[in-house]
Image (tube, rainbow, N blue to C red; front, side, top):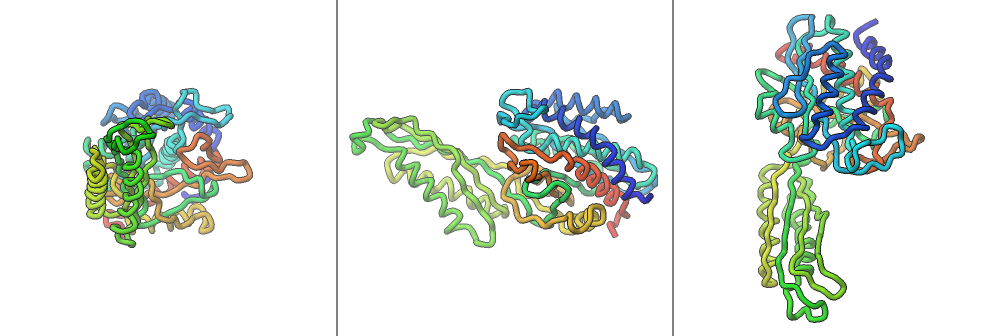
Length: 400
């Protein structure tokens, strides 16, 4: 039996073990930078599997290195995020979240489980692969400044991590399949905070007030010109306002309106120019009406750039492992991911793990209270992650 088939057999054989790990994590989610029990569970699981404890660079999460025994090779990294979201789960399943208002609605329980599964495979086959693999269990992906940026600052990519793979669930892809995209993939993600200060009063006498609701409405509309009249058509850009609070009533014009939104794009120079335009539009609209405006564009994660060479090779390795019909091309995706910080430092490949099962009704998107997965995806996720790691770490140092 060759190495690839051995990995397939090991991943299938541990399926029930992976399901149990994933369900425990799903039942016990923790918010970003509060993953103390999650980290403890990972350490307990590693101990049972015969590994050392995590090396810690931040308060939660950590990393551990596994070394192949076939000599030579490179140090590469695998990354899984471990935090959950402030969402109340609506799924009525036996593994439903026990923590009120917190849910693994973005699949980080799956990512953590697959990395643990990959580690089991790598340890079992240690005699058959070269190089070293750094397995990173990263805290705080869902919250600025992003756990990835903190780990990089603390040296997680030192001394010579040559490349990194990250795997993320994708509810649009059926379980058993995966997706890749070389080059630009995910957007930079900035947060917009706006407070329009006017003069409230009786709704029947608007001429005696400075109506912040009207000004806010004009700002929301005008901000769309950042995309339609300022962005180059070749640079995908999104400006969305998702929160508007105007504490008035049927006959009351409020003193102020508060808004929050997001800016997504794929070019750093244009990104900074868009920040300036947003601030200018908000201030000038308010000034025109005699109001004041406080506006902040808070810089978030950068855009995610998949290394062309590494991603193309990884796609080919995935085709070898799963079959060509199980590997899809991804479209550009304007969500944000702090894995982007790694991609700005070293060659990176961030790919998607299919989790959809329409017959079972498993179709909800991430960040929703009904998100769930077809757990057969754990077999694909653990096995493929181990296979990609072995192929990349066992390459010669020139990558040829």
